[in-house]
Length: 169
Image (tube, rainbow, N blue to C red):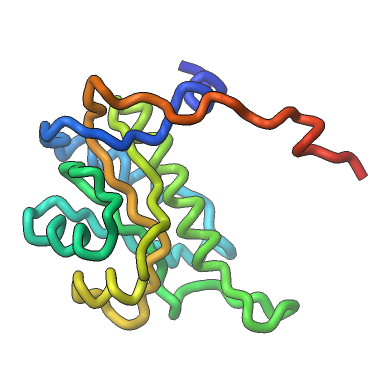
């Protein structure tokens, strides 16, 4: 599969089988996140793999969008490692870096036959508290993942035209 085929075929999965994801596949998905580019190569990303019934139950209390997935990746960044932009005071790269990491993991998951859904509907402080994460960690995304249920399918099939999105200057 070419990258463009992967990009065109991937969709957000919102219904999962309860089959466990083999550790070898989870390791490949995590490895993709480890190799994602980050500002100044500071690598502030933190990846938490929630697959115990206790951790999944805690996440379910923080968002209605775990979709009963057997695994939920909790992705964030370490604020003490995040690059600080001296030309734009107050800006740090952590959220952008964690988003790049999440994208790499999401695409590798699809390549491995694992569906996922990028979830942003949650309160980061509530998730951190529920999971007992350190104060220096900022959660930026939740990513339920697993094998897509037969009823799962894309919800979006229309995309804006290039002229609507791209402008040469």
